[in-house]
Length: 149
Image (tube, rainbow, N blue to C red; front, side):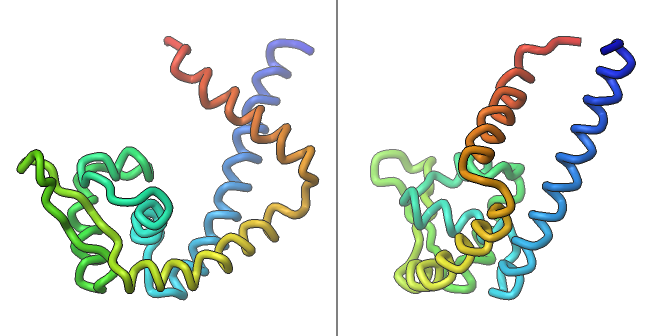
């Protein structure tokens, strides 16, 4: 294959990957919005539900969100009674986000349906194909830090 064909194939892969992500993301976000959350709120709630209390300063990196937006999202979730802020007993500079009992009940109720919807969206490929896709996409993602222009 010529270098031009290689470049065109890379561009085609980028476009197909972008369109697939957009289609999947729109479908998933539709469900989240039906539950009166935005995707970022859902991400924070899901993180706290599955991983426990998190320092506010670290949440953004874990759910791919700019740190400046965390305060806004935490405020909204706090007003809904789904999470609360808890001061770190050892370091006054650190504040944790903690899921409340009503937050746990809420996410426990909706997460199984969220999971099932994602599974249905991905069911067009076999488990073997999923493993291949996971490994290939990890390979691409991890290699990016090694590129220099």
